[in-house]
Image 1 (cartoon, one colour):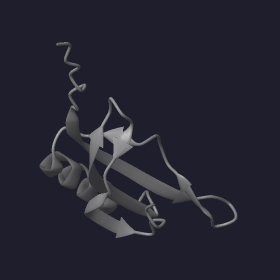
Image 2 (spheres, rainbow, N blue to C red):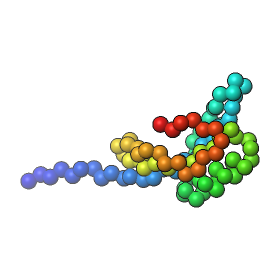
Image 3 (cartoon, rainbow, N blue to C red):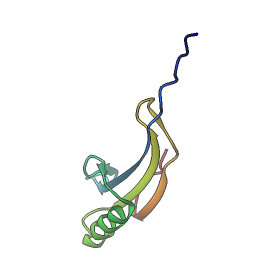
Length: 89
């Protein structure tokens, strides 16, 4: 009898840091490409530091589960948010 194994899913948690600036028209723009961070504590620390600089209109750090093999992502969970940040999808 031939049995077919389902591929194993490798779910991981992505932790991301992102900042925003305002352009000449006052619209929010991404300040840099989203940065993956190794831990929630590091994400909070970096986001707080960036918010304290006053350089950015807004800073956000979030996590979400991710099955990178199948391209499936869970809902984002905000870890830290400061200032003006667009709604997350």
